[in-house]
Picture 1 (cartoon, rainbow, N blue to C red):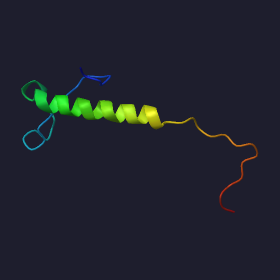
Picture 2: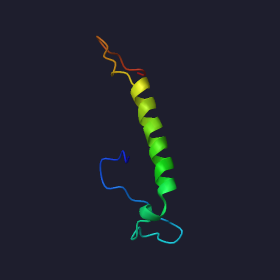
Picture 3: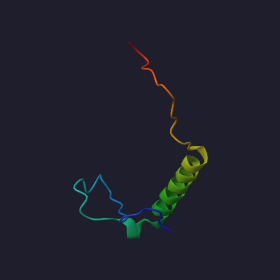
Picture 4: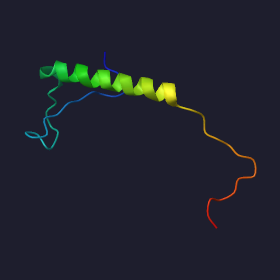
Length: 63
């Protein structure tokens, strides 16, 4: 399962600095590992996010 919203691409920057040839098909284990990390990150963000704070009569921190 790919979690990205756009096209998913993977490049070998040692051999393809111009990002012309995606190697995603030949490295499914890397894609799986990156997707797991992305899912863990998204789960952490969701669990630890909070709404923006609003203060009545705000004052600057410095003069």
